[in-house]
Amino acid sequence: METLIGRQAEIKILTSAVGSPRAEFVALYGRRRVGKTFLVNRMFNNKFAFKMTGVIEGTLKDQFTAFADAMSDYGLEMPHRPQDWMQAFVMLKNALKSRVGTGEPCVVFIDELPALDADGSHVASAVGYFWNNWACMHDNIVFIICGSATSWMITNVIDSKGGLHDRITVEMPIHPFTLKETEEYLEDKHFVWNRQMILQAYMVFGGIPYYLSLLNNDESLVQNVDRLFFSQDVRMRSEFRRLFNTLYKKPDKYIDIIKALSTSRQGMTREELAAALKCANNGHLGNRLQDLIYCDLIRKNIVREKEIKRKDAIYQLCDFFCLFYLTFVNKAEVEQQFWTHHINTPPINTWMGLSYERICMAHIEQIKHALHIDTISTLTYSWRSKSTQPAAQIDLVIERADRIINVCEVKYSQEEYELDKEEYDKIVKRKTAFISETGLRHIPWLTMITTVGIARGKYSEMIQSQVTLDDLFEV
Image (cartoon, rainbow, N blue to C red; front, side):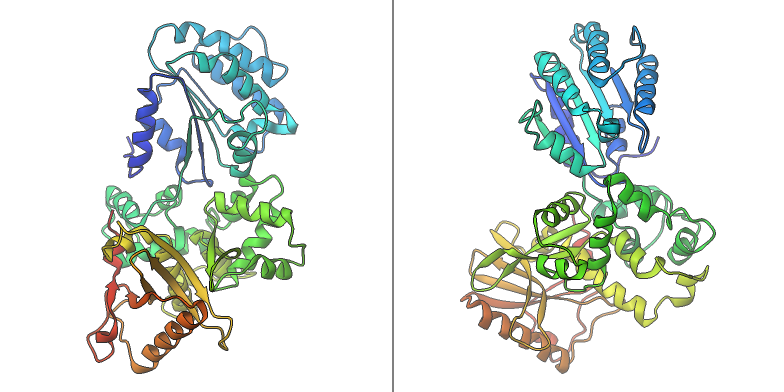
């Protein structure tokens, strides 16, 4: 049986739900392939009173067939084929009455709930009726719903204005693995890769368990990348479109946003995005951006000027698979051993530097722990100058309640990073512009985040604090 890696906080929450003295309504959501279903199945060892899975891109007829099949699998009586979801959930309620009466935990799991809403079938209303008029009255029921179409889950369940309004007792977003969890996963699969290689794998696949499961421990990372993306096996070449088709009913406008952000190292404001997309900067754009944030595909970084300006936030693509795919795979023609032939070339080295910056942004808690400031209230953001030409940018700023600011510079290299006078002067210039433009009176500490540290030299002594790759692997 495959080991459940990480997810300690989620396991604790689900364990608490089972032991709760009241009925619990649990909503899980997150991007496709992140391991939501695997978590629930392993947590309950597939011991459910009832479980069904919606048919992705299936018709309403397909969904009812899946429901009837699941009823049969769990030995539940179904007097006739349901005509709508209200009938279906009434049948489920009646079939579960005897199970509820035993006093044992009665776990009901509806996986890929958004798929059940085929043809506008109003499944959310039926789920609301099932919970409000029966399930919530039985203390031993744990009702779990799950979906990859995160925007649907948020709109129709989490933030429902109808029958499910404020009914969810446990809201659980499932995020990609951290670097440490990725390391644990690969070790469990008997990989002997060092942390530099695991870091590079993370740059390609992110912390997505399904993608990691496709890796072969008999091959090097370079060979794995060629096989999965550039060979005749087109599994990962077609994953990009499948990902967005699963998440959104009308995916093209979401893909346009992702493509636009993939071209920008610094990220883009809403105004810049609207201009690039040639669309209005209105609520529709804002809703799509929020949907992408919910799915861990993009990140919203606040802007610091003389004051915090959240409305001028900068959006960045933070899904590593999407960034890799759009940078290298989404080309008209790609040679079958592209990665083997081009590794360590300038385009790939540039991409690795960009990816490492974004990996650091995804591991802020580990960085704070390494700096011994994880108990201090902080505000984190990137910063872009409005006065210097070209615009100076700081990768990461950690503004602390103790009146110190860690001005962080992220550098990727496979050996110790050599900080010379030219680069040090650039860092100081960026720091000076930041203090001048923001007017902050905090003490600025220059902080370098590298892979294996800074080589000793005249300018390394000017850096107040350092973080390395090993620090990012801390729990």
